[in-house]
Image (cartoon, rainbow, N blue to C red):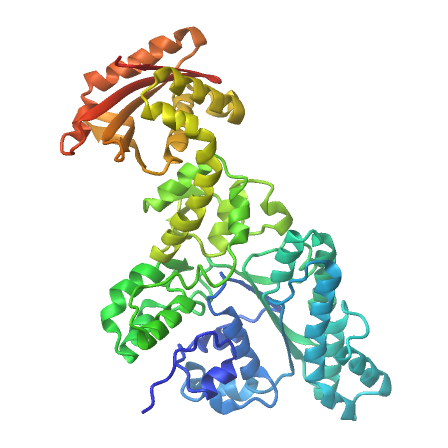
Length: 554
C-alpha cells in the first residue's frame, strides 16, 4: 500500500482526505459540538494547532452537497443516527480572516470585501432559486460583486440561504482576531473593531436564520464589544477541559504517526522538542511541528529537530511587548529558561489595545499564544507557567534573550567593566546610577524583609543581563545560602554577594559590612570547592531607598 504523505500546510479537510494524506482523526469534535450546542462557540488556541483544519472539517461535514465518503472510517462515522440527522443537512457560510492584513483601514476593507465576495460567488446558484424574489437575487448579486453593506453581509447571506433551503445556516469564522492584531499595529484599531462588531452583530446576534456559529482565534477578545449582546456565547480557551483533545496531537497519536513512518527511534527527540503543551486536562504536541518533523525525517538526511512553529510566522508581537519589560520581568524569563516555573495571574479577556498598557499583560499573551503553558494553579488563582518544550526554549534563548542583551546590556557595560576590574567605587557608582534611572524606593514593600528581597531581585536582574556570566540566587553554600553567586568563566573567577537593607543612609556601610562578614563566617567560598575557580571576590552591598554602599574584603 502506498504510504500516505504528511499533510504539510494542508488545512483543507476535503483535500487532505481525498489527496491520500495522513490524518489524525479529530472528527469526534463534531459529536461534542452538537451535544453541547451553543449559539455562538468561540475557540481560542495558539496558531498552528489545527484550528483551520477543524473548521474545514466542520464545513465538509455539515454543508449541503458534501461528499459524505470522506468521513468513512473516521470516529464520527460510527455515530450513525447523528450522521443521518446532521451530515450534509445545512447551508454553511465559511470565511477565514487570516489574510486581512491591510496597512490601513481602506486596504483592510478591500481584503474583507474580497473574502465576502468570494463566499457570495459560491452561492451564485441562488439566482435561479424559485424561493427568492428579484430583490433578494439583486442583493446577493451585489455581494458577489463587492457592492452593498459589508457590515450586513453575513446576515444577508444567511437569510437568503435559509430562505432558499428552508434550513438554518451554520456560520464559520476562522482567525477572527487577525484583523484586530494588524489594525492595532497599523493604527486603525477602532475602525476595525467597529466594523467587526457590526458584521458579527448583524450576522450572529439574534439571527433567526442561523443554527449556530463557530469562531476561532488566538486571543479571547471579549471586551472589544465584538461579541456584545450575544446570548451567553460559549468560550472555550486553552484551560478548559471541554474540547481539550481536538486541537493538538496526544502522545498516543504522535507515537502512532512515528510508527506509521517507521520513525520510532525519534520519539524521544520529538517529545523533547514538540511536546509539553497543556490544553484543559490533556497534554499535547504542536501538530505543525510533528507533521513537518516527520516530513523532514522522510525526505532529508538532516535529522536535527528544527524550530518549525517558532519560524512559521512573525514573532513581532512578543518582541514588541518585551520593549516595556523591566529587570524583574527579564529575571523571570531567566527563571523560565532554567526550566523553572513562575506564578502569574492570567487575563483571558484582553483587548489588543490593552496589551501594551501593562507589563503583566505580557504573560497572558505569551500564555494564550503558545509561548508558555501551565502546570497547575495556585490557591490564589495564579497559574504555574513554564516553557513547554525545547523548541520554545530555543526561541527564548535566540530571540527574547538577544533582545534583552542588546537593549539592557549596553547601558550596563560600565557596571560590568567595574566588576571585571574589581573596582568597588565604580561598582557602587553604577548601581546607584541604575537605581536613580529605573526604580522607585516605594517599590520595595513595607517590611525590612520585603525591601531586602526587592533589592536582591533588582541586583539579580542587572547581573543576569550580561552574557558569559552564570548568576545563581539563594544557593546552598558552606553553612547557609548565599544571596548571589556570580561565575565568570571568561576570567575564571567567582563573585559572592550578600545583599542587605539599611533603614537609613547613615547605616549603609555598617549593613554592607555585616553582609561581607556573613560571607566569611558562613563559609560561602565552599560553593567553589569542587570547581577549578581559585579567585573569589566577596561583596557586601547594602541598599536604602535609591542609594547603595558596596564593601569588599580589600
